[in-house]
Length: 444
Image (cartoon, rainbow, N blue to C red; front, side):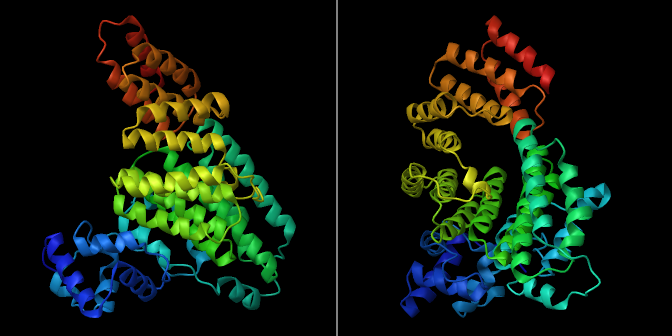
């Protein structure tokens, strides 16, 4: 392929071809989603509109756009990501291999996160995976029942509680070894289709947790690549289990990672897919979870209209009584977590008064009590108060933040400490600022 052309030239080709067919953005989005295999609802109208205006180039979606519009994919030469797409191999074999590679430091170095991998995950699930295993497993393999499924759920809760308190860097390899050494024989065992769906769903939660722990442990390309792989496999397992809440929540993990890595268009696309899953759910916390994620992605993408729209939908949903089973991470999306996320979205949108109100709501009204979570909220609140000119308030809040941060192994907490230390350099003559810098240095 030759070099990548200007985005407007690509947009002109797409727009002209759509005009010849009498298509608008909705028609294009539906056609491309169907052609790619993800379904007509996976691509949002606004996302397709940006292809037509030149605000975004299709990248991963280009071969599918070219096919539905009868364009020559080589003529426009949109360069695809060099990172390998997730394989279509059997989901169980693939996730076990991922875990084993993760435990092998030398092999882990070959994995890095990419925007192409994140979007490719949308088309991966194999709907016949469980059925094939039920009908094709030897009678000599281990028999699996509800007891094994419940054991996975208990382990997910135990490890998840530890990670929420002390950060993803604590006990991550326990989660991975449990997946590869204990759960793997069950996945390859003998079970009914109903048990198989429960087993895949529980394993999706464990895999999602391993991804979150890797992402929270550090910001190296290798750890972020491992996290992305786990999120994609958590989605595959959940979708194959027929659990839309777990599937949407796994995609939400991919979306948030894309936000953190700066893949803005991909974050919006994945967040829209989360919201689409939420439409089939009766759990208002899941609906709030996914809409807040899309609002966050839209705010990062400088789309104030889209961000405001989905902030309102999230607020409406979080105020309704929860009807979730409690198994999904979405079921644990509390009003406190919503208030924190909403506060940071308001910060990105420039409304610092609303941001401070929501962060105060998260801390003092809903009382987030996990050390890692509370530390991050305090760090964010200190930054907002500093931007408002409330220096004394920022110093006091950051002092509380450092109290919570001690002993927590989380990349977000470490990043917040570094950010705080840099901002405190503005006050070289303030004793309190220098004391905070000294305390922070001891934690990095």
